[in-house]
Image 1: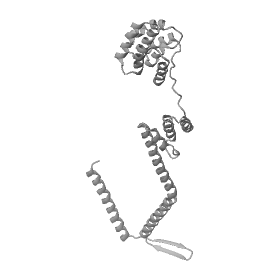
Image 2 (image 1 turned 90 degrees about the vertical axis):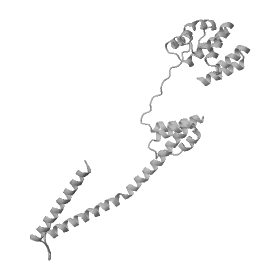
Image 3 (image 1 turned 180 degrees about the vertical axis):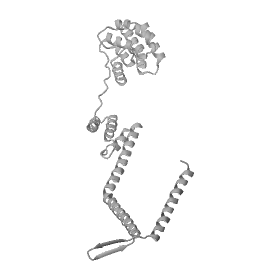
Image 4 (image 1 turned 60 degrees about the vertical axis):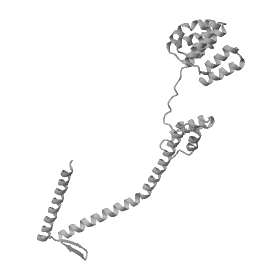
Length: 279
């Protein structure tokens, strides 16, 4: 609706009210009417129009009085609700701050914020989930578990944990699984799972090696199996291939040291720790 049309409507309404006022004024002069109230020994006399004006004035006064009274009666409740909203906003801002510190990889700062009570927040379960994650990153496992339990008590339903596929514990099933779906982390298990000897393992990996020619893990496994089988030339070939693919890989660097010095307990212990970090 344009501004001109709205202005025209308001002018029409004001004109109609003015005409009504003039008409009523003329009626008051021409025929004021008569109203008589009598009760016991008391009487009240007035014109009809004076009665109408008094009635409207009393009605408006009562409406204002009771409206104001209702507002005053609701004032304590409104103040309490306003205080609650202010507490919610403050608590929610604390929740956002904790999440931001956690995103910035500052779990200590996040936990210092999220340790405070979450009862005033809109999402208390999320508060304790973030606190649990912050404590977990700080390796405060007992605290992390306690916060997690607090979050779960506040949740209407707890999603089931996603079940991850576990790596087969035998060589042939692992080989079959990797042929269907390649996983670089599982490829390292081709050297150790099951009871197959190194030479038969190495022979079984030929077809897989053709399909995964860019796998560093597979080259490392083949090199170690060749070393264990006494195949120095083949081991050197796989070591060179692994070095070409990723020369800075810790397992490749360790493999180069092992090829020069031989396997030692210290190197095996270091390799074991590297594999744990990669898991």
